Length: 181
Image 1: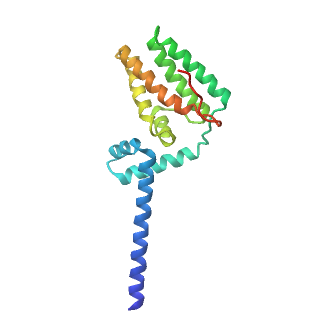
Image 2 (image 1 turned 60 degrees about the horizontal axis):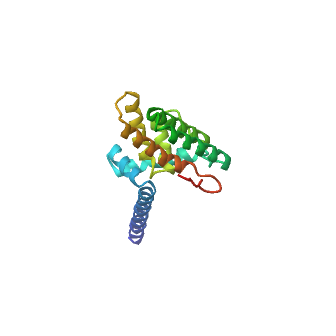
Image 3 (image 1 turned 90 degrees about the horizontal axis):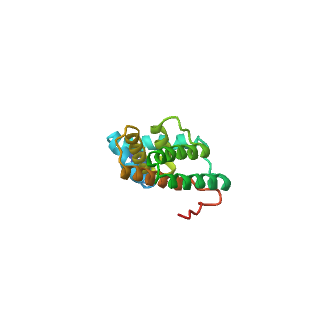
């Protein structure tokens, strides 16, 4: 009889420990991913499925060997960004296209695969969860630009959104590049 009671107690403790560990994992994911976590819940339909998707994403990105930029690389990209911002006045359409290309170049230099947009956004969400939504918005506006449906204000907003991600990606081993503008 005591053996059965002991077994039930051990199983109960194991169940409580497992539930606690799951809750901790869930809370860590939610805290780390922030708004991206809520997006994953909406897309998958449940917190448990979102947890699985985001855990898989994080595992995939850990295997990518993402690296920071060297200071010379970051400074070169920063100069190119300044040029793109300057071209916006005369060629907003071209500036948006150039900003999109530059963000992809920075991602590639950091080690992110850039094969398709959805994969890029998912990969970025692991280390840049607070700005990945800016990237998605910028991309939607860039697509509207290509179809001739975006006005100048939307193009300006696309550049602003690309910049949020660009600045986050521009970190070097020594820290962030201090932007003058």
